[in-house]
Amino acid sequence: NYVCAAGTGSFIEEQAKRLGVGLSQFSDMAMGAKAPFTSDRCTVYMERDLSELLGEGWSREALAASVLNSVRDNYMAKVVNKSPLGDYIVFQGATARNRALVAAFEQLLGRPIHVSPWCHLTGALGAALLCLEAAAEKSAAEQQEGTAFSMGGDSLKTAEEVCDRCVNRCLLTVVSRGETITGWGMKCG
Image (cartoon, rainbow, N blue to C red):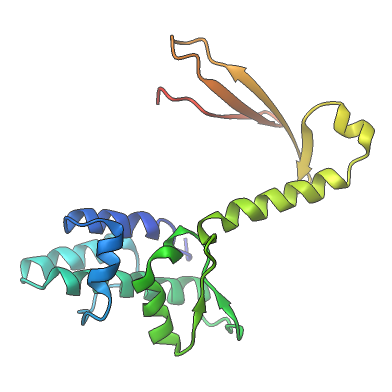
């Protein structure tokens, strides 16, 4: 996987817990701290480097800054790579709520990074807009036949079911795509 930037928000959260702080405190700690070098290759190597730095006695502030710089550098190297950046940069996703990470990008790029107050919802909003567009293309008769819709050429069918495997009686959302069936909403694990 050449784009090894997945899970960076979870990685930041794990490292905050490791340092015994919450996410907002982690961001505050990292702000303005001098960061020792850690790998930007993937979170496995980043975590290895952080363990070594922790053993060497680096401050929690320095380690927090190092985590954010590694995440930033990983994104720039693996996702952006050599692609040109536009003039107006928008940071999307819940990780954009980390002010110190935004500052790390701004420091590297030398320009402002724009973050919406709804940055954590942008992916869901985009998916909802795609569904609205797909639904608008269907005739009224097709929409009344059931909750089937198409995305990317694949026909999807949704339904709700109550699970009867235990007393919790979880309300499940079931999505069928061809022979593949996926469900959400099970509270039992």
